[in-house]
Image 1 (tube, rainbow over the protein chains, first blue to last red):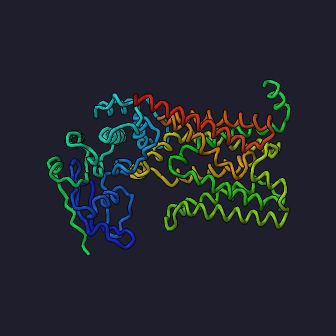
Image 2: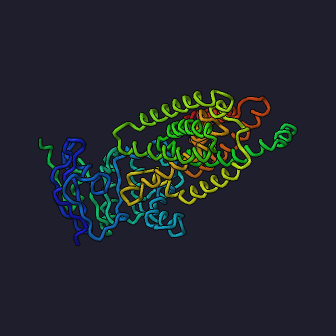
Image 3: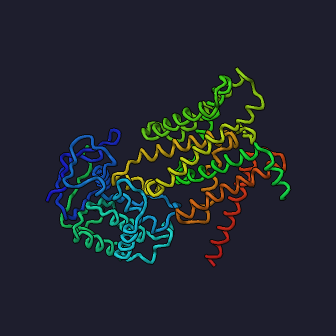
Length: 210
Length: 276
């Protein structure tokens, strides 16, 4: 079943072309790896799918996917280093986009947060502060948040950045696991050798054309 | 000490100022945390200068300062955020321009009309006498509304300021929450300005949050601690100002500064201990 179609998407920042004429389709349950050189527009593609950047031309259409089915994970720089938040608070906040009107957490939300913490093997970090965690632990926390949001489409921008070989392998296995339960994943990475084995589809973005 | 407090509460204007001040400091501490975390601390400062400018317009016209300032400062907050989003101009540059200009316009208007008198000095540096009987109710009602909004949107505000891109990608209306924060900040600044003064009101917003963040590492604990600190520092500031006859706003800021330094020290020693 088709859930996403991008047709000739191009994005310009100021006058520089960041993404040129990108077209592809995605079925539910796919694990798409997006690879390419620096500056080939990998992150830009992901941002435009997430709705953070408006494409200058082309169209991005979702089928059977609502806005709150999307989970986006930026490269690590997005979240502030000194932000006071416990792991539990972060994970629990994922359930929010399932609420339409009522803005408080219920019993079910808390249960779900606990379940996902356990699923990703970080339940012992629950009371810890997010800012004290290592890179790999943070990624897992953010992933747990997306699972709480019951996202159907995960957009991951370089989720292995800053992870050592072992933890990035682990991360890949976790993602594969989530994917096998039916979640569609688009992952941007520059590490083809390490990660392409986990993807069932691959998109190569070419270098900049001048 | 007890005598001093008894003395303090025997004046009805002090009681009024304390009631309004406690409301304002509670609201300010709640709004301050999101502002500090989003690197919007300077918005408070900019808006307070705009508030001064609007007061300068209201006073010679004989209008109620609150009723003129609140809508105008809210408008300024709205514009500031819009400029930030359009990103043609740096956000901090925009704040600097707006705050300096409105301060200058305010000073010019005042010197042309009523002249630089004690009233003006009170607006700049605050006065405990400034709160009139009729304004107390308005201030309390507005504060209660702000508190209610904050509690209601607490979780949403957390998710928006923690990770704006994620929230936006999953369909949260970021602009709404940004605007809500800016508008509420505008209101609380105008109210608090009467006691704290235009020059010092932004400290009420940023100090409690920054102080609590020295020691506490979860969002909820920081919110609770900064609310508590804010009210305690306000009260101590008023007492000190009364006992030593110094301006209220300045002594509140001084107490806040001391609490900030104490928290810094504790966190320093805590970290040192952890290393050993």
